[in-house]
Figure (spheres, rainbow, N blue to C red):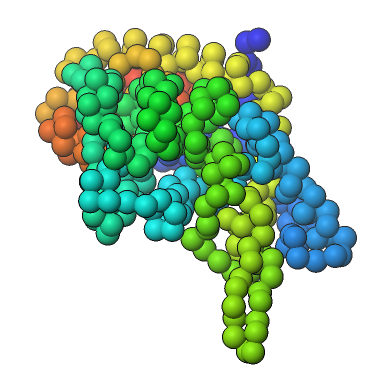
Length: 412
């Protein structure tokens, strides 16, 4: 199936907008995706006609929305092929999911020693770096870093040397938000499973660009943010194996995850929690964001994920071929990769390029991309990054290339 990109563009109202009297070309999709009309319109209808809280009432609106949210849990379970909907936890975003895990695994459940270590990689987003750094500092755990080779691929041989019987867990991004490279997570998970070590996969950049099957991956945890797949902000998913979720305790307590409280002689003797996954979801839910998942999944299903992946792959190759013709360009990361392309132009600062491109209605990301360690590895302060989505076209890329060349000539 060939995607009708002109028709798809019409699904996203913001793409009609003009910036500085130029038609908007949005190439910052690794940061967040734009929202299709099916999401925007249905959430508006929900807020006008159906809004209520869930799980805590017996009235019609509450019951209907509770059933709706739990059906969405089932849909997400099927989308990533988990064994059970009870392995799906609603969270705010990937950052919260990783912080949640760092708290429940280390603070409450896993015993550590002075020899304990956690392994991440040099290409991690700060969200998969800072939580582990602070936890390791607090509990006197060593934080080990997998380096990359000169070709920008993770050094698996280095990883094999880092991992040992004292390793508690490994937390790795599926796809680098900076380089766009697809990491060999199957190999990594196979090694962690051999050592019986927990594996955590940051799927922020892969959820809409790669078909995810958590049962085939055999990871213990997989995390992603909804806004990377057309939902409203403020909703994400933490997948965890049921046996692990049942075993561990949450790190937040309150309304919604308390089953009973034993009080004897005016003293609280014990608080009993409800079952997983709901014990990890205290407080009022971000209901409209959860419901936006339903319509985002419907949009993806209508177009078919395989068609999105196929189209974006072609557009990535087209873009790379155009960029490679620009003099003095440095492109970071090699195949296999998705449509995340980071680059610099020699002797020109990335911020200047991004600022001037905006004058022509073109949105790109510039700076350290929340990955300072990889910037230090390349001995630079920042990069220009474009990231592609199904609503980008060859015409968009041609326009971007035209103005990029114009900007370079201005800044020479």
